[in-house]
Structures are given as C-alpha cells and as structure tokens.
Image (cartoon, rainbow, N blue to C red):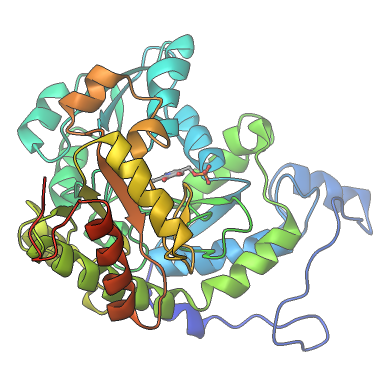
Length: 407
Ligand code: PLP
C-alpha cells in the first residue's frame, strides 16, 4: 500500500455522472440489479462496484471514505453517522466476551462512559491508564488484551500520546492500536507512526461547519470488510450509517481542511503564547512548557501546526462561567461544546463534555473546575481577538491591567 501524503486531497479525482466536478449524490436507499445472480453475489460480498442497500455502503459514502483513507494513509475507510458510531462498532468488532482493553484515562467523556459503563455488560473490561507513561501502559496489558485505545491529543486535557511507543507495545503483544485523531487531523498521521486504526469524529474540524455529526474508521480493507459484513459486522448490524447527502457535504468541506487547520493552529498558538505570558495557566501542545511539546514536534506534519485546541485555568467554575458568558456577549465566540467551528467555542469540560467522568477521577487526572477548553476559530485578526479577550479577563479580575494573572 502506497502511503499518500496528508495533503493529497487534491489528488483525488471523482467526476459526477454528467462530468460534474463534484461526484453525483446517490439519493437511493436501495439498488436494482439486472440479474438475480448479481444480487446474490453482492450479498456474498464479491461483486465489486455493485451496491445493494445504503446501510451497507453507498457511492457517496464510499467517496468520502476514500478521501479520508487517503488523508490518513490507510487502505480504506468506513464513514458513520457520528464519531460514537465509529468508535463503538470498532471496539465491539475487535473485542468479545472475556476480552480486555487498555485505554487512556483522558479521553472524550462519551467514549469513557462506553468503556466504563456499557462494555462491561458484554464482559469486556477496560483498564484506564496514564497514556503518557509507557511503563504503566505495558503493565496494564494482560493475556486477554485486544486493544490499546487512545486519543492523539486528548479531550479535554490535551495530553499527547506517544504513537510510536504505543505502536511498538501493540506489536510486541499482538494487539491493535486504535487512535482517535479528532483533535489533530492533518497535524498528526497516526498510521504513519504505526497505529492500526484511526477514528475521527467528523463533527469537529474535518467537517468544520458544526452542521452535522459524523464519524469515520480508517483501517485495512480486512477490518472494514469485517465491520460491513452482513452476518456479523458491527457497523452493518448496529446501523450507524451516514446519510449520503451528508457524506457529499462533508466531502466538500474536507477540501478546505488543510487551510482551516493552518489558520486554527496559527490563531491558537498566538493566543496560547499571549495567555501564558500574561501568567495564565495555559495548556497548548505548541508551547515549550507543554510536557509533550517535543514529542508532538517529533510526530507532526509541520505545516499544519499544533492544532486549534487550548485550555486555560481561571481558578474556579464560577469564574470560568462568568468569563465564558462575557466573552460570548462580546461576540468572541460561543459558549458551546464541540470544536472545529469557524468561530471560537468554549466550555468548561468538568460540567459538560467530561461530566460522565466521576468527580474523584476528574481530580486524579488533573481536570480542575476552573478549566476552560477553547476551540480557537478562524478569526482574521487574532490580535484584536486577544485584546478583547484580555479586556474581558481584566474586567472580571482574572488578569490585572499589568498583565499578570490574579490567580
Ligand atoms: N472523539 C472525540 C475526541 C470527541 O471529542 C468526540 C465528541 O465530542 C467524539 C469522539 C464523539 O463524536 P460524535 O459526537 O461525533 O459522536
């Protein structure tokens, strides 16, 4: 398999059926056959180029899947109705009763809840570990472990996984390294670093317009065939299929991802540097003070930067809420969960996207009450944004006029 570079999106060539520059949208849930024999062969999975029923696959979904596979450097991909609709079938396909997963403890709250509360019903156990400590990760692997699971850059603490180190462990113990790359599309290519399977919530940067949820699993042809198998494929049977109209619109947005990521990263780096200089507790992988700054640098596709996500800690939930409300009032962004929008989005993860994680565990992993997670937008004049943000912080006493933090 030839690895296609991360910016190879322009190399893809799909025409519409009338020569349109965009592929035609497949507006059908079912497909007709000239012969009954071909229909039978399609059910058996050996009639390439034929479509049967859109829960299995559709031309529009395949176009988007192929584009994402090219981006991540995998043989192929399967798109789904949401990020969770990609994560849950992969884990259920790879693990059965009695199997074990080693997962990062700092992951998206929904994934955490799935592993902590849901998969035990099927006798699948998960050990949650500090993913930045490879010794602890290795120590958690048992003879029943089938999957090593992490986010490249974790939600919301922005911990960075050492994908090469984890991939070596996965190879040593013959288990699959599954990486959620939602926070770092293009910036990091996990498969190039040894990961087996890459997942995205397309809801975020990849679609970038906060108008839909969506997901993708990028992996080998063998894995994707298993997921789509009509008899025992978790994607096929659990049914979290993306609609073709959405696949077509996400494909169009994907084409500007490289430009958007550059701008998200540029703006986030600018603000992170200013906030840190102001004395605010700032976490951003692009800051030399980030514990995994050098690791990120060693893994990244440099031209896309360190991503659009940063956090600051303003000391208490009350202060965080006040500041977010004021910033929204001044039109600096929206008090909203999710990420990757053209406007800045901010939320306090402890009470929102990570609220599934019990309080004591939030504390243990360093998720504090005053933490604000920012998804930095595509602002054309980020210096002006910074000035207005600073004014908000001064007004609320988070910063004094002379730049130093009051916390
Ligand atoms: N992975 C990460 C890192 C996320 O932040 C999210 C959602 O916030 C998901 C997965 C789930 O994706 P979706 O909401 O599209 O199901």
